[in-house]
Image 1: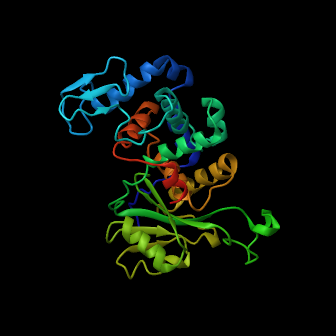
Image 2: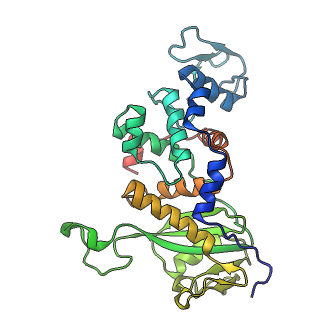
Image 3: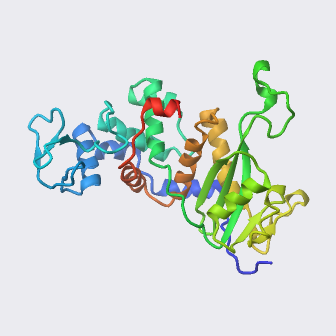
Length: 325
């Protein structure tokens, strides 16, 4: 029994409303970043804070190249040329920084996601380039999910994918209904509303038990539904509370799973209404997109963009590496 446990009772609607209050309008965005030069200065200010230093050796002895060719800066110590893209997920990209910034803005303000076809139309690039650009941005949101989520958490699982009955005859597995042909995703929500979600191989007790041990603090109070995959939590040292949804129970003494289920609602709406399809191969990237957006819902648009740029340093993604991963 839990009598003083303030589990988050957020909803998708409330999360969206809190975000819209601090959103930067498209008109304001173009007022602030009217051209490529404004975008370049913003990227440089975000990375170097007004003091340019070499990403190769760290030297502050830097000279600006007059015509910015082959790159805007040259280090006097290691003699290498570099730009604000060097050593980030933007490296080797031929797209203007203004389009990069616009793409980040579009993704961070679309709470249920934005399809690559729409990005392509808005940015004036091909759909293939828009999809790859979006994956670059998603790459910055990977990682950063180590450590416990606290001592009061909600855990749930869901299946992502289309219904077997809606598939073409040659795509049907003919192995039953329910979760057949879908991919399992496990999620955990802290008492502050922070969410982590991971694509898992299955929903067996060994798999879900390992997920909880990886993301919940030892001895934490864990609230779940009555899914059989959570039967081993008490043996693992957790205070396990099971909510029986089948009899209409959704909250017991403030213990509930509504927080993580509201996140599933946003993810599913993005799947059905925006992307229409998320391949198993790239599903974790889409899940990261929604979880990162959910966790930064109290941040303004520019804060969200700043976090994305800060996390882009030291990451690299090639098209070959992406499609053959």
